[in-house]
Length: 137
Image 1 (cartoon, helix red, strand yellow):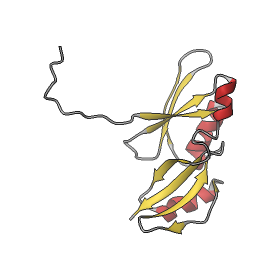
Image 2 (tube, rainbow, N blue to C red):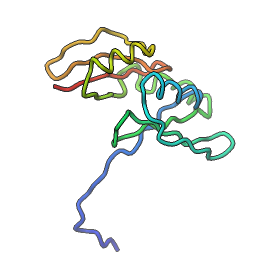
Image 3 (cartoon, helix red, strand yellow):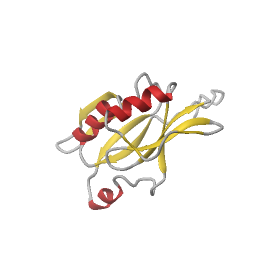
Image 4 (spheres, rainbow, N blue to C red):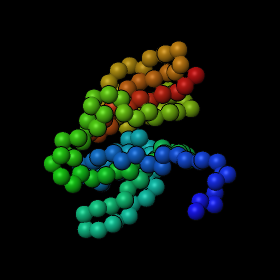
């Protein structure tokens, strides 16, 4: 019997799995080029690790870097969203982060643009997944 019938629903997305070819190269990209924090790196068995990264000072959703384990997953690396922007990296200072990311070798697919709702530019991760760097107005 559920004794918490009056308790309000509180949920959040704790992590999103992102397929990667190699744990260490993915960790290096996210921590060095994007300045993410390595939250956890735990060996689960001989092949599998539990690797979580998140943007600096973030208390929200984390990325679970999931190493591919079969040919079907290998085909999806870099194309998990079918060529669309998949992830949105929200910042409180677009130009600070844009310039730092450019200096760190991150590939932007376009010049920054001003939209009615935000300053935004599309970049890609080391495998080609597309992201928006975005500062909402």
